[in-house]
Length: 87
Image (cartoon, rainbow, N blue to C red; front, side, top):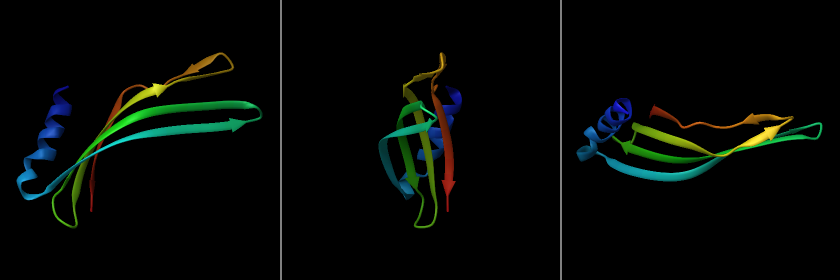
């Protein structure tokens, strides 16, 4: 949790000089092969900070909300996060 708070602090530390934006999305991974079908989904929350017209920071938190079972094997998405800088 400390890492998440630290990353959010870094994203917002230059917010007085930039534009902060939010986004909510849904990501889905699907595959079908020889009658076997797999479909997983995650709800994503993104917070970004546009530093200037050429650079931005983004932090995304994803929570798996759609699990699936294939041939008796359960596949699920756990909570994950990532940070990225865009030039």
